Length: 308
Image (cartoon, rainbow, N blue to C red; front, side, top):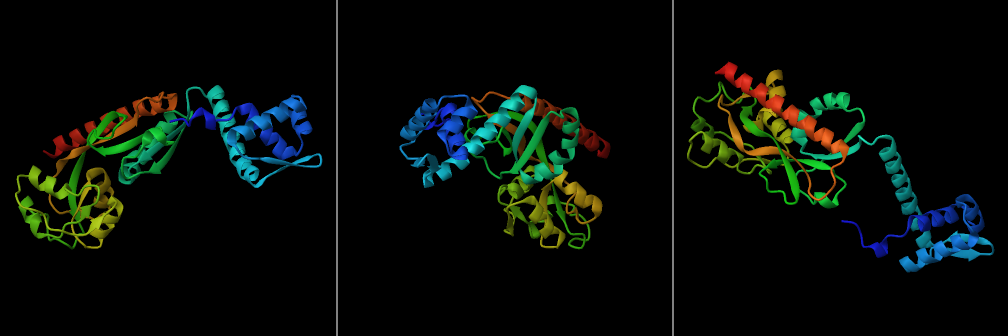
């Protein structure tokens, strides 16, 4: 949401203020901006009246910044520079630009990041910036163009692109078990590790395999990475997405605690704000991501069929 107009000075007033603050003279600022000195003075008065604060003080023929002016000019210069860069980008790169994406750490690191080189080759005009967010947030009021979401379609005010369900597998340190358990119910007697954002993960896993009974309590973690490290050090059995577990299984740091896998009742989505114009960078990324997700699902289906 844009701030009320009474808090938004005109660009010409900000340019006049910045020039005077830098040059120390309304005359020099007028020469630089190809305006009259009286026009510069009017812009400065309008700006100070709008803000209700003195930004400049006259000392002889020199105009000096007040304390408020010193703080304000720093922000003004940053805003003017960013606006100029955005304008140049829009003019010279109308089909590209920046894409600010909020990601979930496990999905971003182990599924998305290895594929981003392909996007960069296909769309060199787009620069993708990644930041971690564990929970839904007010995306409409943020700098983010889109986000990766896990769960259900319960994030208000966004569009959804379904990507894939999360297939999970129980894993543990090689010396924790002699062999993978043959019956899922046998897992109830083991120490189980839990994730804060999936507090019912084990309950759902057992239920999907027809097992009654509550899983035991155990250590709680905020990210898959720390939970995987705990499992590697023998602290219990972790329930990890297959895309996250595969590197650890391949390297022998973890082994299957059970050969049975199920699909979680949650899904991964790309979400982006409703009511905000979709820029070309987001459109390109959204179409690319949809193709990547479809290919990943097809590979998983082929792997499942070959193992059957």
